[in-house]
Length: 581
Image (cartoon, rainbow, N blue to C red):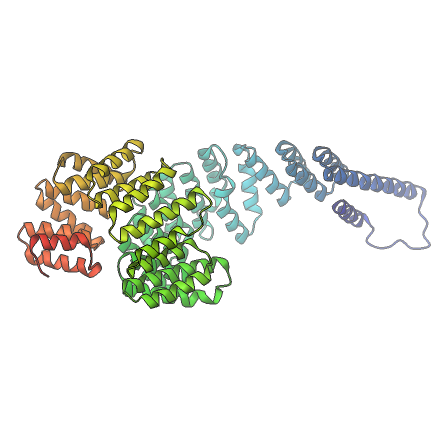
């Protein structure tokens, strides 16, 4: 009702004379009649608006919409057309909203609000072909700032239409006038590219990205599109992205590229991007945290520690923010792990106390506290801590079992760890990730038959589970049995994850077992240049040693030992070959 009265007051004000009548001037008969009619119309309009709003408020939006639209038509007030359209939308009657918006547009052809409402309602109704003219008009009526914002929003506006190819065509036609404009062209081409990509036209999207960057190689939208194309494996997208990154890329694009590299196990390339990011934008706390996480994984404790200190320094002033507090808890836990690995247990406990304070009751903190106890030789107390944690759901029970299994794994009690993991599998029998973990623990426990059975079960259930294919293929190759099957399994895993350095390691290792030493060495050289992992070093060095290249083998082994001095595979290899470094 308040809305109706406000609109009515606005309408009455608009109809009032600009200057007051002279107090002595009496109206003529004609004027008197006209004023009486106007007053009657105003009273009737007010009543209709009031009833329309009351009807809507009582849940009868359809009647309220009809009354409001009738009032709009008779009064010619644009606010009432807008209100009628809003009521129709609130009642989830898109067809009624379309009727109202069309009437509004007909009454006010140059109204941007009417144009926008009609455009978006047509998109909601999936009537994409009818939106081109409206979109073109919207762009024509916009200043440059609004035009750029509109262009950027279009892929999301059309995101739910069923015919993506038609949407891409309609948008491309509507924005044609902007494509060669140096100010709006990069954004327009990026929008066209995003629309084409949504329509699975990868080649067209790549062409649009190239044209956007030809107009402006530093355009952040074009850089983001290039990254999306890299993500879907578009040929040529990588070089386009590198061109953008060579300039002054946005921190978000570089950060997202680093995350993409991490997801594809290209860790050294990710680290390079993170180093560049923390150098150019040292105030970005998240970049330091991701860099620290990567350094922890790569066994670079000093680098990880330095990155963590930067992250903590930047983030602690905002610890009152729950999201920041949670992230800080993770950072403290990483710092605790570094000190644990250094056997500085008191320092590790101090970091864990900070983690517990930042995120009270966090399960992960309790697990790490248990791990710290186990590292100090008190496995029973560590397991008791885990088993005492509350578990009111299947997920929580499973987390406890897996935490317990991890403690046993770290204590090298692999057989018991496999049994405890088996209990977790029983809670969710279809979980292939858990089954894979049980298989790996069975292998470490020496139960090769169980390992093979579990891995084949996973492959049967999920043929694209490349980790299972790789693990089975590597195990066969390492034992020197069924080498052709091993190669087939590894090759199929490699097709599913062609950049995974550990699958490439398996590929090189099976070639060595098949007697293809030269091919194996060439593969290892490429892999080790990207991922200087201790286990890869063990295999690469053994291939070189078998070829008589003893000095180079020792060099590779030393690099592997630097990254992980206690690696079992590397140390076993050196012992078996009688090599001292």
